[in-house]
Image 1 (cartoon, rainbow, N blue to C red):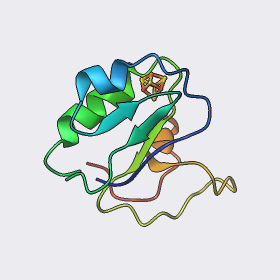
Image 2 (image 1 turned 30 degrees about the vertical axis):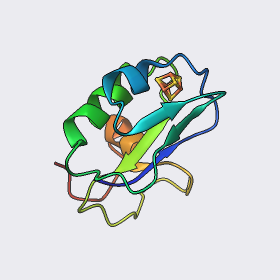
Image 3 (image 1 turned 90 degrees about the vertical axis):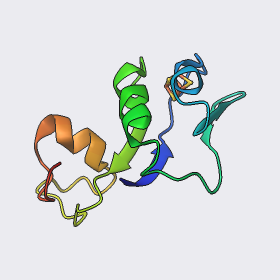
Image 4 (image 1 turned 180 degrees about the vertical axis):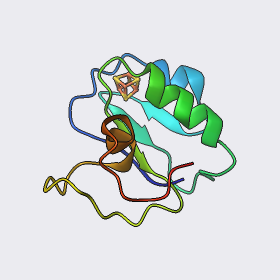
Length: 91
Ligand code: SF4
């Protein structure tokens, strides 16, 4: 897992911080803590992304090339995982 980020639209519900307090810090919006070991907390991050009510937690698979079939360059791997547009190797 790499490039963990929060896309615009977070409603600060706190769910991600509840699920992965080592990774997320929620104030007015959620933020990813600096220096966090993404591999160590990968399962919790995936669960947080799954539970996020507005789907704004984005990340790429470690092996994802970042190339897209879609012309939408802003689309993240965690999004394209759902839409199956990612050319990167999936986990
Ligand atoms: S779960 Fe989603 S909406 Fe809720 S605080 Fe985290 S990023 Fe924001």
